[in-house]
Structures are given as C-alpha cells and as structure tokens.
Image (cartoon, rainbow, N blue to C red; front, side, top):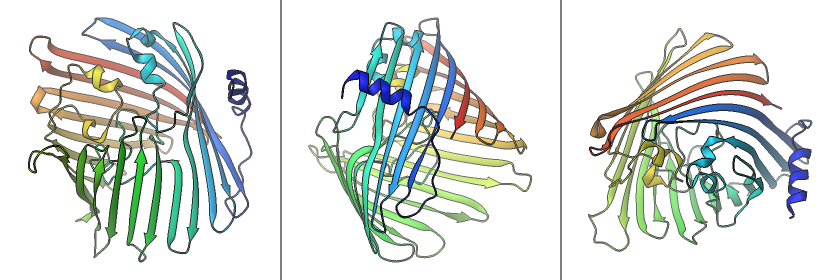
Amino acid sequence: MSRTCLIFLFCLLSFPPLRAQEGNGDLLFRGYLSNMQSVMFQQLHERWYLDNLLHNRLQLKWYAGDHLTTNVEVRNRFFFGNSLDIPGYKEYFSFDRGWTDLSFTLASGESYILETTVDRAWLDLQFGNLEIRAGRQRINWGKTLVWNPNDIFNAYSFFDFDYVEKPGCDALRVRYATGASTDVEASIKVDRDDQVTAAAILRLNPGMYDLQFFGGILNGKDYVAGTGWSGNLKGAGFNGELTFFQPTDSSFGKGDLMLSVGGEYTFRNSLSLQAEYLYSSVDYQYHSFAEFYYLPLTVKQITFTDHNLFVQASYPFTPLFTGTMAVIWYPSIHGYFLGPSLNLSLQEDLDLSFYLQHFCGEFNKAFGRQKLTLAFLRLKWSF
C-alpha cells in the first residue's frame, strides 16, 4: 500500500462512525482521538524535552455469524517534539515486534513522525466449547496489576498508561472449555526475529480461587513454567503469578525466577487501595531509567531491579473527578517512583487527565543518583 493511500486512510477513519449493536451479521466500528502534551526532564543530561502526541485508535469488528468473528484495530499516531533528538527514539516509536511488520511510517522529519500500526487483526472461530483464534491478538495470561510474569506472549509496561489496549502478537491460539470455569489453551507465536514462543495453560476453579498452570518455551531460548491465582482473602482481592525460566543451553537450576503477589481492597467510602510485590532473579544491566522506559520489553524485562514494592490509592472525589497516587519502592537501587494522576470526566465521552511520573535511584555509583521526571496532560474523546 502506498504512502498516499495510507495517509488517506488515516484521515478518512479519523471521523466518528456509527456504533452498531453486537450481534450476528453486525459491524462494530468505534475508537477514540486524544491529544497529549508532555514534558520530560532528564537530570543525567540536564535537558527538558517538550512533546505532543495526537493519537487516534479505530476498531472494526464483524460478527459474521454464530461461529465467526473478525477484528481489526489500527493505531494512528502523530508525534512531534524534542524527544526525537534522543538517539534511537524514532526507531523505538515505529518498532513492530510482530512476525509481520504492520507499522508504517507515513511521514517523518527532524521533529515529527506520523505512524500507523495495525496491532489487532484476527479471525476467531467457535464451535461449541472449542475456540480457534489466528492473527495479531493479545494473549492475556496475567493475574496481577503491575507486573505479569505469566504474560509470556506480550509483555507491557505499567508506565505506558496511554496504551490501555496493550500490545498484541502474531499468534495462533486454541482454547477448549472443559467446564463453566475450567479450560485448556495452547498458543504459539513468532516474533520479528523468527523466535518462537509456545505454551499450554490449564485453568481451574477448585473452590474460592481461579488457578492456572502452564509450561512451554519462550523465544526459543528458555523453557518456561509457571502458575497464577486470583481470588478473595477476607474481603480483599488476592492474586499472584510465579514463573520459572530455564535457558535451553544451560543445566537445570541456573534459570531465573519471577514472583508477583498483590491485593486490593475497596472501602465503603469508595477509597481503593492496591499493593503488589515483585521479585526477579534476572541479572539486569540497565544504566538509567530512560533506557528502561523506552526499550521494547519482554516478560523478563518488565522491571529493572530484583525487589519491587508497589502501593496505590485511588479515590473518586466526585462521580466525575478521580485522583490516584502510585508509589513504587526499589530498595536495591535506593530508589522510588511517584505517580500521581487526576482524571476529570467533562462529559460522557470526553475526559481530561493529568499524569506525573518521577523516578529516582542509583544505578551506578559512578553516575550518582539519577532522576527522571515526566508530566502529561491529555484530552481524550471516545466515539
């Protein structure tokens, strides 16, 4: 497809469509348009970066009948600002981790880039208890909020709040429901480097908890096995994930372990509290927060240190105005993250949000304590 056609498609699809009811033979066409102004200060380089992102997302879903559903979702982004001066940032912005490169740079210059990415394109067949889905999709095996060691197919960053749909992968997934709350699933994906990830998972509900057990191979380099759970403990949500990675080229016992455990509780006054802990035995070699923030992630790189403790409080001051405060403690690097945010619903489909992200810690004594601060102001219209 030529650049001219892609630009025309970008402009055409930016107009709000009609939303159809979900049912056989119906089309569902919806999306959102947002504008986000951001500012970043890197203490390491003592420089301010001012950026703007115009973000448009479109979804076309067709319920073709009792057995067939198809879905295509396109992510259109026009970015301009100082961050394009950062070496490798433009490549990061247009990076497509899928087996098929479905990211298209429509136009770019020294201070701007226009990018279109197809991050969902799948076909789903259902025959009774059997479901088969092929194409670019999200395979979500996570149970916890912030860190998901069980999400071996498409890892994501908690700090990327503007990408609520989360990344997908080019995969084949086969699921068979063995009961009302039990099923078995087998999935396989191939990435841009022709690395294969394949695994099977069993989900059970023997009582008060949903349990899962899985095993397979990750990127052709690690045998992987794990378990996860979610349920209720004395009125509070309680969930967790455990994953073990064993390199295919080393003896057993020299692998890595990742464990996340979390809980949440909502009081009668609507105050919500969440807490989560992550341990990772992976040997991380990051030198700065910015390096972690912008590099593409795999499940073994969802953090940058061994011990991570997260606490978050959220409270609706009014039905239309909500405030949230997130804190993460990184004891091994004597560091922390602070993430306050505010969200105001201007009307049913229009939201104004503010996010602040501040990182502080010591990766290397030669550089001393490092700080990275980002602030975002976003206006988002959903249609």
